[in-house]
Length: 114
Image 1: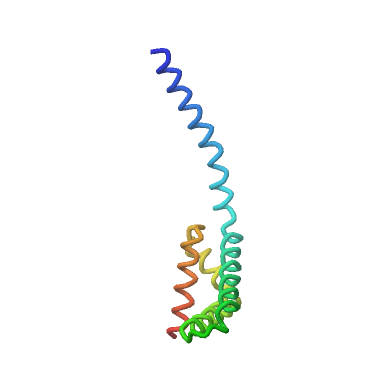
Image 2: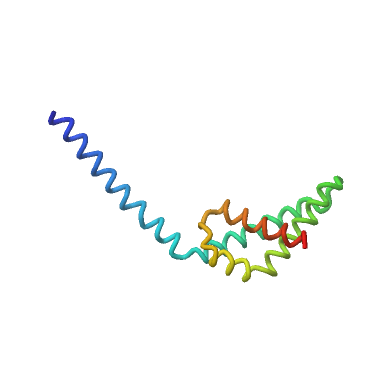
């Protein structure tokens, strides 16, 4: 009986400490989503440019076409960076990298369709 109570109180204590350690990480990330959004855009631009550098001289026509699309995407992200940031802030987009990448890809391909 005594051991069971000791184990339960130890588990509650560990859970409380973990909860306290985890909470500031969440609040600091959501407090400044603009910086996170901007860093994701910059990272995506860098990824596009590295793909272009790698594939623009490929012998495959499909890979060269992909490199051209990536170059267009990098130019789009650089030119529309402020508009994209403002839109993400207005939408209150959750600061998760995969959601931001999906949003940026969606906006880029919609701009191509116009």
